[in-house]
Length: 93
Image 1 (tube, rainbow, N blue to C red):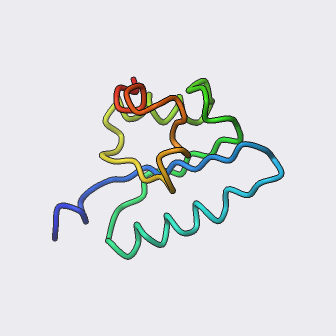
Image 2 (cartoon, rainbow, N blue to C red; image 1 turned 30 degrees about the vertical axis):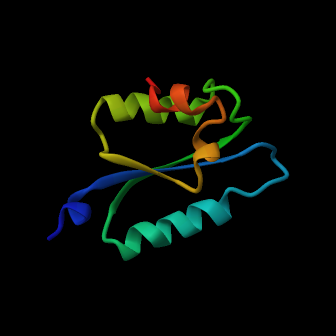
């Protein structure tokens, strides 16, 4: 068993408005994880702007990451995680 196959992974999906679907992101990320043998811990979904990290599921995910409930986060693209800029994104707490 490879290191990747033992890795517990969270999936984070975000859209800006309720007129958009998060399912296309989550479905493709689930397929990606399954093809690589990753264990998916949970899928976190927000409908909110990425300009602020004040998002309910995002904050839950970060809290659970600090509790070591999973090892990695899969996102569709970096702007789905945060649009606050690279420095702030790298230092998410």
